[in-house]
Amino acid sequence: MTCVDTADGELAEKLAVFLRRSLGRADLRVSGLERKSTGMSRENWTFVAESESSGGWREALILRRDPTGGMLETDRKTEYEILLALHAAGLPIPKVVGVDLDGEHMGRPALVMEIAPGNCEYFVLNGDRPLEIRTRLANDFLDLLINMQNVDCEVAGLQGVLEDPGPNPALHELRRWSAELARVALEPMPEMELIYAWLHEHARAARKIVLVHGDFKPGNALIHADRISAMLDWETAHRGDPLEDLGWITNPARAKEHQIPGRWERAQIAETFHARTGYDFDDRELHWWNVFACWKLAIIVLTGLRSTIDERFDRIHHNPTALYRRMLKMVEF
Amino acid sequence: MRPTISEQIHATRRILNDSVLPRVNDEYSSRILEMVLSNLEMLETAWTDVLPFLRWDNESAQKLLSELRNDVGSELALAINRIKSDPASDSLDASTLQARNEALQALVQQSIRQCGPENRRRIHAQLLERTARYPMRPKGAGLANARPQVENEKC
Image (cartoon, rainbow over all chains, first blue to last red):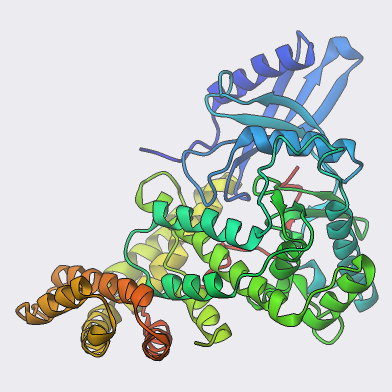
């Protein structure tokens, strides 16, 4: 089986037919279709759509199509409904201009979205910008996270879309990702089992259920004129504990992406989150979510590894032993 | 025996890097090829450590399981006895060592669910040592090929 499909004329034609119907522009043309190397869970293809009869309408768009395999296997319909709801709620989400949920037109489930201005900068908080700008951006990211948590899922119409995690979202997520681990595991991994045992024994109930992004990071955002212009990649969004995303961004394994040494570190992020939300928690509870973040990240890497071995993914992944080691150092028995 | 495996991997990497990569025109294929080259670079030096690692890991797991045997259920204890009494595997045969490794680690994994705190601490220490010795370590392990900046590649 081949996963490589980089300059596909047939795909461009399918896309044009699909968009003519979706957008009601009979003479719509697609040009410059190019597969991008970013995106581990979707194929990302950028292109330009044009229509002369619509007053010279021209727009740069992106096709996000389900891959044959990748690092995450998630539901396209749920993601689509989240994107619509959060765009309507005023969050910086690119507009969806076409959707093919069952892959009838594009071969596999796909979304077509507008391209928001800006760059994707994984390490923007530790890049070349002056410290004051980076610190403000770090604050902006936290504010965006809090604004997302303030979205009322019922008002936004997401109650029926996103599963109710019950009173203990920590155990709910543990079960969910444990099932994913069982699905993708190529060999016994006692490291993951030992961490699972620790997580299971130390999970605590939440006092509030909020919308969780699931992979909140600068690498899933666009920066334009030193501001966040868009938050992307909502395929792992779900309802859960307010500390889940906080645990993700204060996870020591991702410190270079989320923290600024001496200015915006774990303790400062946690304090600022508490001050802005009023949500009470202690350090051990946040620590649980830090360990969970590493464990979940390891499963995402193992999913990529499984896809590689199954010849459904064109990246080479390895057992995430560095993450195992980090997690083992984070727990005591 | 020349060319050695390392020499062959090195030559493959050099040819791909010097003769193929400059002629790959689209960004996606270039990036994928760079990742493949990076993996070959890791394998070029790491492959020699795989057999010694498997031998060490199997011996250590077998010793650990002997210590855990009295702290697990009778069925698991029986499985531990069985694997211990198996004839020693050929220490130069990578496939046999790998198969035995999976069998031993499966028993360690099962033991975690059954043993008490003291033996969990023992397993914890053993796994920390194991992760320090693992021979194949790609650059940026665990971070899913994060890149510093990508212009206009996301919606």
